[in-house]
Amino acid sequence: MSIDRSLKTAGNLVKHRNVLTRAERIEKLLDDERFSMNDGNPIGLPKVANRKVVTGGKTSKKEEGAAEAEAEGAGATDAAAT
Image (cartoon, rainbow, N blue to C red; front, side, top):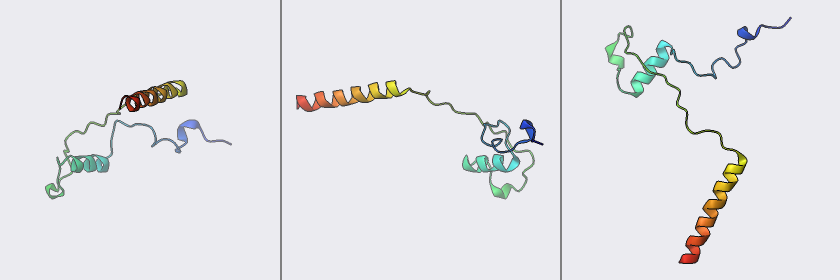
């Protein structure tokens, strides 16, 4: 008998989560210097935004090759000018 897809745990922590555990929130607040361990009361922590940052998009091999060719061509013209 197989396990239902919803019960598998292999990739659950890989995806982005908006809700952090208390330990993750404290760690993030410590990094931002908004919480100190001397406060002693982890109840009533300030909210912590956990937003996924998307940078750029996927580029195809053709686009990468064209960009490299342009960079090499610009370098060759600069060397010829000197």
